Image (cartoon, rainbow, N blue to C red; front, side, top):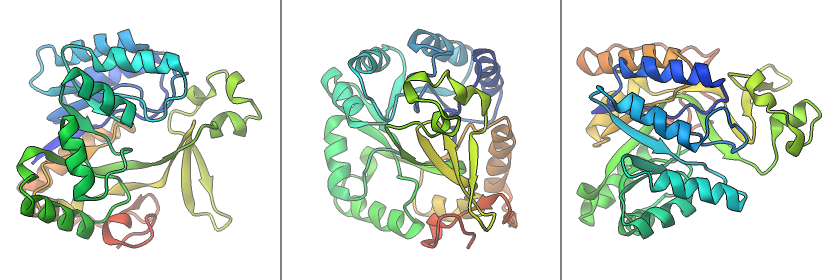
Length: 293
């Protein structure tokens, strides 16, 4: 099993992003994803900067670098940026919406189907394979049982060897996207006049229930889980069902510590009691996502 560092989902200053990925070069990740996936107004790094950073990370680094694309595209200008990223000529692309899938198909280039692509059955996997998918990241709300059944069906239908399976295993879950910006709204600003206020919340804005439960983290147009998903105790079952890659989200530099813990877990398994204050694993066990089984 390999381990990946997912794309950073938060809006950080350019210097912080570059510093983070320079540290990622010496991390224990086998695969590094990078790129803006949430909001095109986050222009600390533009498409050219992301591709330059991808080259910097890939240089003298025995890791696969993957360029991730936006999840919710809303303008012709965003499509033009998307085309440039897809036609980068050097790096595998993680397609996070179907327009990226179409572009990669037109370019006859392989791609990774990201977690925001709604793929819940073998029929959809077959469609994506015909388009050029070589790796599938399971939607984050699916359970372990669902994945096991789906991979068995893929084996029965003779397509399992045609793609790698990746599972989001640690970090705040990217649950949903909206045309509206929650962070701008929380500061009583219009989305068109957001003044890039997301950069003031490098870990998003927490939204608690009246009972004090950490229901969500609001991150611009993105709604994330309020608790950090943690499948470290499920690694053996992931491995048994044939999962190829476990993804650690680049939430903060804590991700590097988690990469080391997950890798060590494969060598010498330890039962980690999950922290009910900050962590969850509910979706994997078919219970409320914010819960711990």
